Image (cartoon, rainbow, N blue to C red; front, top):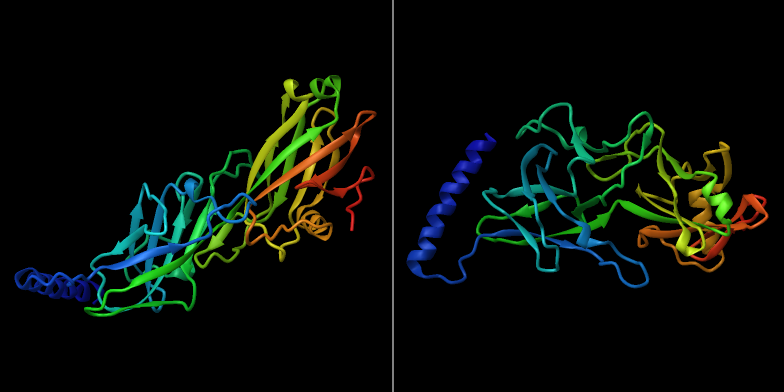
Length: 319
């Protein structure tokens, strides 16, 4: 039935377009276009990094949630005028969902291959694929999501093309890490890693959290002798939220198998905000986390987030 409607609609559109050409009607355009609204990252760090969006998959579902069609742009040039044209779509109410940067690291999971008129949006999810034995050490790419700003569907009307606007958001956060204050011996004689523990590796197709197993992001910190033996590293993690309290970060001396500093990441961000930071998780997608050692205390450190001290030498999260 769906295929018959589409073929019938294509036939009608072909007749109308021929009429447009024959009658020289300059305004006779029948394109339904999908635009993306976003806040680009600014100097103060608010917004999303659209330059890192390398691929868009746009999924179309009918009003009951059945899959209709997928559009893919493998090299989008995101801007306020960028759009995807919905071709060969008969009139009706549709639910649109877009994901950015699906590929080797993020993939769509489904009970079966996407089938027109059969696959249901409630059965679909996007999953992080780089977790092995409960750990991911990959340098992750950003993940993006977009859907309607208001309401659950949009209407495509006959002979009345429209511009559909989806709200584009980023689902990943960057944690820049540094360790300062250690002397050359403590840096070169020991290995240091940072782990972030979470249970957020899968999203439903409305971008809500899906059930996930516990896992850890991990990175070994690099030594920078030319920068006073600074330790440095970076982790990109999936979505952080005030409502999720299970995200913890730890600095580990791997050689001694000893935890040095860290804590509940959401509480640490909240502590920074109480001291004057403005770290809104809906707007900020990058955090600078610094472990600051006393030269005589290589197994204890203060912790700072975006310049605000949030943990003291005793490991206490500051109010």
